[in-house]
Length: 247
Ligand code: NAP
Image (cartoon, rainbow, N blue to C red; front, side, top):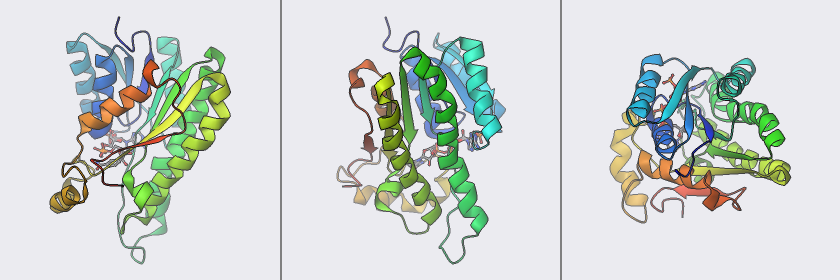
C-alpha cells in the first residue's frame, strides 16, 4: 500500500511551479489530489492529466483562495466530491516587489491577501471537517524571506513571517484533535514567480551553505514527509528547504 493511499489532499496554486511539484509528489505517493488554480485552467488540467497518466487520482478546482467565498467553496467542493479532506497545502502565492518608498499600499494588501489571508481562510474552512475526523495535516508554504527578511520584499517577507506565526498558533489550537500544522520555507527556486530575477541565481547559490539551490522536487519531498505518518509527532515546525541559506 502506498504511503498516502486513501488520503485526500488539496494543494492551492498547484497549476504551476512549486504547487505543481507538490501535487505530483503527493499523487505519486497515493493521495487523491485536488489541483487548485485561480486562472490557468489549461495548466491545471495538464497537472491532472500527468497524475492520471501515472495511474493516480486528481481533479482540478478553480477558486480564488484569497477570497472568503473562494476558500470556502474549494473546501466544500472537495469534501462533496471526495467525501473527506485529510491534507491541506497552502501554497498559492504572489510577489509585488519594490523598495518601500515606491511600493503602493495596494501591493502590500494584494500580497498579504494572497499569501497569508488565503492560508488562514483555507485552514479555517478545512479544520471543521478535519476536527470531526480527528485527523489532519496542514502545511503552509512560507519562504526564507519570512525568516531572514529580504530587501525589496517588505510585503512578501511580512506575509511569509505571518505564515510562521499562523503555523505555530494553529498547531497549538488543533493539536488536541490530532491535526498537525507545519511550514516549509523554500529558498530561491526558479519558477514563474522568480524567472525575471534570474540574475540573482548565482548570488543565491553563493549564499547557500551547500552551494546548490533547492528544486521544486526538494520542496515537494519535504511536504510529503510532513504529511506522512513518519511526521505524526511533528507540529508547529518550519522546515527550511534552502541548501542551508537561512543559517
Ligand atoms: P508560481 O510559479 O508563480 O505559481 C503560483 C501559483 O499560485 C499558480 O498555480 C497560481 O495559479 C496560484 N495562485 C496565485 N494566486 C492565487 C489565488 N488567489 N488563488 C488560487 N491560486 C492562486 O509560484 P511558485 O514560485 O511556485 O510559488 C509557490 C509558493 O512558494 C508561493 O507561496 C511562494 O511564495 C513560495 N515560494 C517560492 C519561492 C521561489 O523561489 N519560487 C521561494 C520561497 C517560497 P494560476 O496558474 O491559475 O495563476
